[in-house]
Image (cartoon, rainbow, N blue to C red; front, side):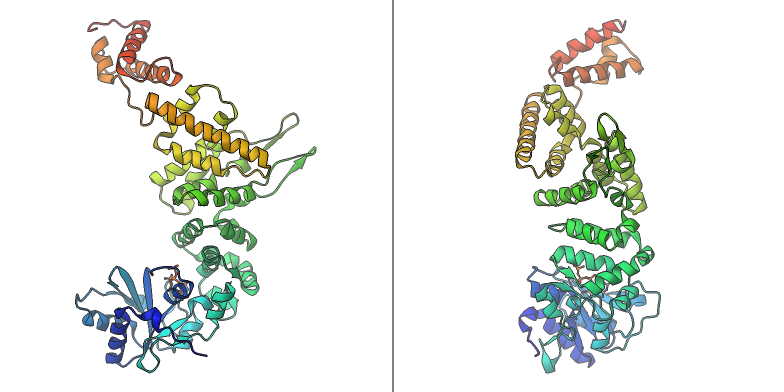
Length: 475
Ligand code: CTP
């Protein structure tokens, strides 16, 4: 039975598109994500895809003519598509195709397909739903593959044989997993098998597009769904081998370590509950990657991962580089989180001095709260008593950080005595002594020997300078 989706296309823009198509005497439909997200009530669309049974480019031009502000049309001739912006939403126009839909395809684009040809070549049944913009059946849902039912059953299925759909565009393997994560849908078993069978084909997909999907998986409510599927389909070794290396539990002489892959996924889910910061979520995903190369068994103490934070932070650089991710402040942030990921744990375990807290704030700077969020997410013990204890300890660390901050202002530390003042005081030219004195002042503050303020720092500077054998000409 045909359903009417008039409500979905109440926005006047659809009337305008319909008029434009009528003027050109072609049929056109709203298709893809817009229809899917309307059914799922996923909020306002970012873009709207229109498929024309004819030239998408001509249709876009005609729509632009009819709009009062005459927006500019961007034409992508090679892909046979055109785009215009209207009220902050991107309208994408494409002609129906018989052959692969894939935008990056090097094959010539075969147009002049029917709507059904076009729907056939789309990735998933839930993305192949179309709503008619034609006079004869304006608002009718055209759903030849039961995409509507799949939305209800929460299933990701391909319109054609999965092997065909995935070989048309192997990125769809990632898209299937990404949609399964975002929507919390199941991937049909035949599809899952086809992804596993075709996993190697992911090699031909650009790193940028893969990373785009990884970002979307990580930004989901429960990212572990995606990573578990990447693991299950054996795509993960092609994308993030560092994570694969964390999988497994080894036992020697009755001593076991935890499975750091599944632990990591729990940490990522935990952090997703407390922050939307994508790079903090990346930090959670990568915080233990140094554990695989540093794992050792010692007869007396059992399993150790000495220095895994340092090795892990080095691995972050290589991983970002390999995946063509930005090697900028985002990468440095992730490195820092990985490098410092155990610091608050050590403090929490052994509440000793304020100086450890001051050093933590000094080293983490503005990222100290993010670091605490990461450490809290790292608590995955199933032992309720321990869980409570750890959480409570971190609460105390947070409290201590606040106290130390209020008192000592260590965050974004600025030396209370400048290099110039040291030079003036001891009549020095630029020299290594200045660095030594500055460093000694900083250390004294972090150790709590002096307060983080001018008078005490100056007195300390003079003492230190004299001890170095300098003369105080200007004191
Ligand atoms: N599509 C496809 N194969 C791809 C990419 C896209 O068949 N590899 C089709 C799907 O019908 C999809 C439409 O093109 O619905 C639009 O693609 P895109 O804008 O990338 O995705 P959306 O479905 O709109 O979803 P999202 O915006 O969440 O990525």
